[in-house]
Length: 112
Image (tube, rainbow, N blue to C red):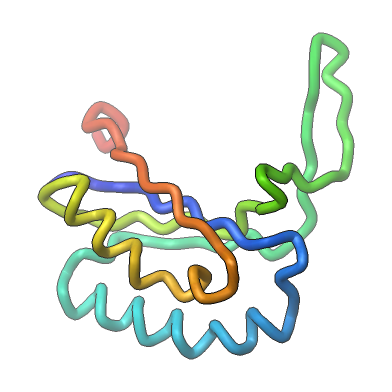
């Protein structure tokens, strides 16, 4: 089995109400992934975001947006193929709220 990182993004407008609504859905999905023995770990980024930029190493409190979406969590799952990992990503509740999930294979060298 290979490990895959699911970078979870939500619209900048995604707020407390959406998070409260998605919470029970996330619990159900993670419970299923654990039962299927594909779940490795996950962590959310609910707090403030900072960037360090350029040669000057300027620090700024800001959220990086891409297509008006921000990263809010990372999930590590295991699957035999990228296609299987993509199928697992389809279960992410944020997709119902305009979110996006980027799936990337974690290189074996990083797992040692």
